[in-house]
Each structure stands twice: as structure tokens, then as C-alpha cells.
Length: 81
Image (cartoon, rainbow, N blue to C red; front, side, top):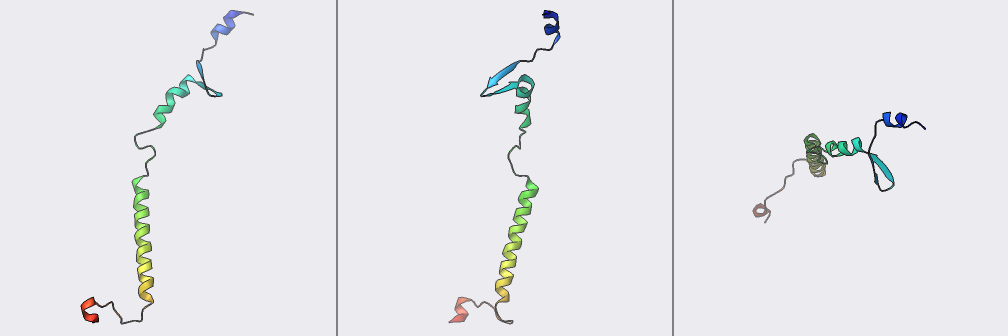
């Protein structure tokens, strides 16, 4: 066979990692895929969860107050006795 044909092809270095062959460009790109906030929850999602939790607490408190007859209130300890 003619060696010139094989020399014209760009040589791509491949390294064996486990059972997979990983090309060099992919190895160089993979560290760049993890930015400084990689794995952190975005602040707008934390804000949503906090608001939702406050809503649930407020709703539970309103439901508890709805169980009592109208006009009643929680008395301080010194007034009870």
C-alpha cells in the first residue's frame, strides 16, 4: 500500500481510559465544562423554595386559626389563672 495516503490523514491521539478511547480534543474540553458555579443551586430556585415554605407555614397557621370559633384569642399565661 501507499504510505502517502496514510500520512495525509490528520493524526488524532487517543488514550485508553477503561474500555473507552477518548480523543484528545474531548479531554481538553472536559475541564472547561465545569464552571465556577458548577453543582450549585441557582439563587432564584432557592428564593422560590423559601417563598413556598413561607406560604405553607402561613397556610397551616391560617387553617389552625380557622378551627377556633370566631372572636376567640390566645390568652397570655397571667390572664388564664
